[in-house]
Length: 422
Image 1 (cartoon, rainbow, N blue to C red):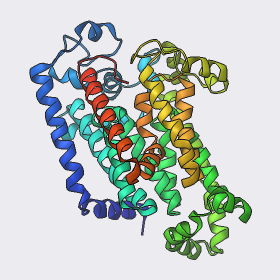
Image 2: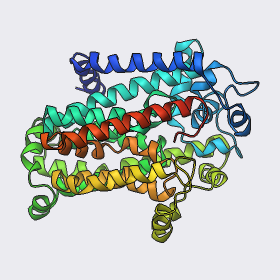
Image 3: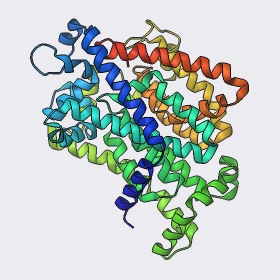
Image 4: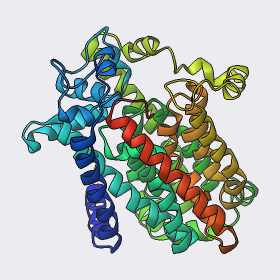
């Protein structure tokens, strides 16, 4: 069976699950409420609309649809409609998402705004279903249910409904995690190769892939130290896939798994190479995206080893929630830090994912947009679901749920009205 048939069968299986109605029952009312509130009580910041360098529509005054194309969404719409050109600040954004919007816009009457929102909601819906199934298989339905609830109401999860890359990125990350856990390396290859075309941090997928390779193709003492409780799970989940792989390779299962696991490290690097080739083709400069980052003056790879700057930045917030200096961003980073000991006990491999998805973005941009980036740190929500599902912690569980929900509502209002949300 080809990889595409497997993906198709998996999607069909997910759609038939009872969780489909539950997820759809959240998405539709959510969007309807936002549409109604924006129509009747919208308070779009016109001054901010004209001040930024990318807006939608590209020319003329704001329209109703401008509520759903603020901040980075306007950059993605510009790239999907106009494309990449040298010297344009929008080149700092990665190409897979605007390409998908461009390719699907004809299905929606040529509207890139509608195409982007539909794609975002479909991708996040599939990601939530996959997240629930994977978490349930490892830690049970109660923990998985609460983990999913925390993921959905998390303040930064508002971007799963709008024209941002978070939905696609989370789906690809979970697809890679699923492929590694189930030893479906063909799926892992596709997801790992596409991640660097979606967000810059995608190239660091080499770290969890490397950790996985060590855990399945390394001395026994390493596997016992890394995650002793997972050996049985991995064997049960990946047994049929490993058997199939051995029949195709003509090698022992362990030898075949060794080669395929280590070869996965090339996928993110290949994806990054494709990104550079596309930028060279479109702009004449393979590093145009990095040059455009200088316009924003925030994210830099040099920040990753500038630990003093990171520590000082953490202790010097300047506003409750703005582009830089956000107190909210720093508070949500503390939530991730609180989850790290829980992840250590659950599965040390999840710590690697938390580092790539949660700590690297915080360091590279000194917490800029961290509320949004943290929405994709799926191990954090697993830790919250597993730990807070206990009855003795119900007061903390419901308290955190209320705080997340109130912040989510506030940030949605800010986003659709061109105030900073993340």
